Image (cartoon, rainbow, N blue to C red; front, side):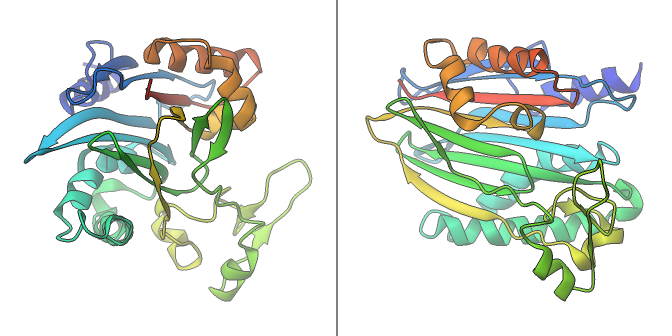
Amino acid sequence: MTTREILNKMKVKVGLGSSDPDSGKGKSKMSKNITHGFHLVKGKSYHDMEDYVVAQFKQVDSNELGLFAIFDGHAGHNVPNYLQSHLFDNILKEPDFWKEPADAVKRAYSKTDSNILEMSGELGRGGSTAVTAILVNCQKLIVANIGDSRAVLCKKGVAKQLSVDHEPNTEHEDIKNRGGFVSNFPGDVPRVDGRLAVSRAFGDKSLKKHLSSEPFVTVENINDDAEFIILASDGLWKVMSNQEAVNCIKNIKDARSSAKRLTEEAVNKKSTDDISCIVVKFQ
């Protein structure tokens, strides 16, 4: 069995809801109007696919949670694979998740990063960005991210970014205060210590003194004017603006078809990176 086949089996095992590990869909039991779909496309790099997704609805006691995430790995797939299996479990283990979800998510991100660093001998030197969204009882959305994967909400046809792109240039003072530097070589993107193109990430033990793993967290109420949310790795956002992405799928009813359409459009726009996309339709 090849490495790719092993990874595919692992992706199906965690409940992505499809016999095809690169595409899938599901729906809420609490509200028949809320559906989700995802699609992944391998980039033109020579390494294995390093994007991982979670997309599922889960019953927790009397509550329904929609769990959605994109983990975009770098320097290997072990860290995003670990996040796919453990991050949401760690979040839901936080005792005050239901009362103070934003604080609980921040603590869980920090604990998960510590676990990854402690397991660096097993997981390797790589790291991962993350964007996660938890839909609580179809009414409240808790979004968190580190790195440059992004969450965009469509409200009445208008794109609203719910995450923050953590880029070295925008956080260069913090990086400098930690003893690092930001390179700006001609023809290349800004990089932490000349190596990493994001200023926050899970893992990356060799750079950790100069990186942050603290997520940006926001809580959004899902009202009647919320149409859908897009979660995608930077392979999409490098070539599409938030509003372009929203416009691309605003007339597509099916969530999985929407996610696939976005990845196709990103490829058409010459994106060469791995592209992963989740769309959650609220109407």
